[in-house]
Amino acid sequence: MTTPPATAAARPGTAARLSAATYRTSRPEPGIVHLGLGNFHRAHQAVYTAAALAEEDGPWGIAAAANRSRAVASAMTEQDLLYSVVEISPEGAAVSVPGVHTEVLVAADEPGTLVDRIAAASTRIVTLTVTEHGYTYSPATLGLDVGAPAVRHDLAAPDAPRTPIGQIVAGLRRRAATHGTPLTVVSCDNLSDNGAHTRRLVREFAALLPGGDDLTGWIDTNVAFPSTMVDRIVPATAPEHLAVAAERLGLDDRAAVPAEPFTMWVLEDRFAAGRPRWEAGGAIFSADVAGYELLKLRLLNGTHSLIAYLGLLSGRRTIPDSVALPFVESAARAVLAGDYLPTLTVPAEIVLDEYVERLFQRFRNSALAHRAAQVGSDGSLKLPQRVTRPALEHLDAGRMPHHLALTVAAYLRCLAPLPGDDLPEGVRDVRDPARERLGELGARASTSRELVEAALLGEGLFGSELGHRTPFLDRTAALLDVLRRHGPETAAAEAAG
Ligand code: CS2
Image (cartoon, rainbow, N blue to C red; front, side, top):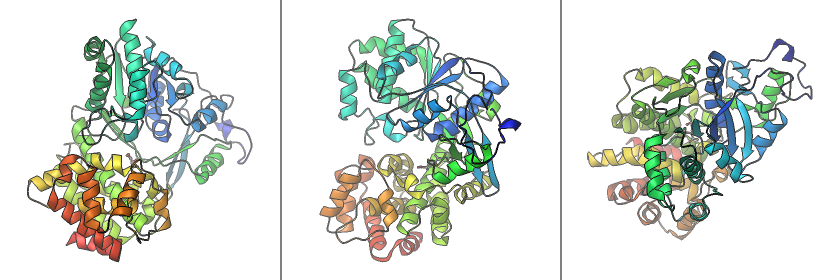
């Protein structure tokens, strides 16, 4: 990792931009192609890669592609591909500059270039942070969403792909047809079993192309898909984060990324063509990635979702402001300990009490001001990963997971208001691909029960199996009713029994 040289401690507020002139970075050889040039990648994998390269040279420079958005790519291009990571906690801020990118591009503008990069023999690893959205899968079946317009487009025009899965397959197809060099594809998204999930979608897509059998055969022999658990709270950049970066750097950085100090990365050590020494940055290579993944996806992400929806419904805008409400903290602790924890085997290296207390300390990081609407967004894709399997496990064992039902009810309360329902303003900032459809269902429903049935059974919103569990639908509807009539605090008390 490159740290600010003494001379860069220039005067705050100067107009100078972050650039190679002020930050010495000898650019590494490219060897990684990354899909998803968002904040998470830049504050997580890029930082680990910088640590690896600081310890040991290697061909691990990153060519990173944003799918459509040009903002980060153009800001980085103006700054010699540099940006700062601003670690923010109540104790203060620390800034570092991971100079590991060798190229940035926007896939929508140059789909051919991205395929060229994935296909290049010098590329050994493709990494992804494309969020749940980016995998173009059906939450109901977990298979490729072959009905989605973008997937249909890519199957019809496989050399000019728009979806990450189409882009990866286009690159693999070219590799298979030319030099045949092996490759590793690493999903760094919050999906359970993210390696196997990505492999399944890539194989399904490949099988649908002409010559698909040969291609899937080649993929089976030459492409590794290790699973990973990624963890770091990385908000969207807000003006106050840019101000902290400028003040710390003494330079303007239009591409700065805020992040909490905590960071964790656990990976399966199955790489087909080598890898950086990411352990230099603290990455853990483990045979029990699945254990870490479920721990994080449920205890952190699942709890996060409930905090976000209850907070938004209480008129709070940030996660720290939400969890500061005593009833939200109690509900968060209850969903964590009562509903998520019994569905997990905690990895042997984790000291549970410390992990949980650390989690709440992280949620309370008020200096970071993580927006509740950011966490609450895309619930139709996130909640099936967080809520569905634990809920089914409890129901199968004859138990009612009250706080998982509360999570679903609070989500529906935000996204599918019934006629006459009034909501705090901040709820409008929650984005979701299902928003329009859920809005229609809400507008048509005359009772909470009708809405819950239409969403969970009719639409199979959280997987078809959960939609058929009548007791869960009843409990969710009852809690939604309380949310609508008496508000989040009474509903949380009702869930607690
Ligand atoms: C959050 C995650 O937005 C969300 O849904 O739960 O982005 C969370 O902050 C990260 O996964 C933390 O590693």
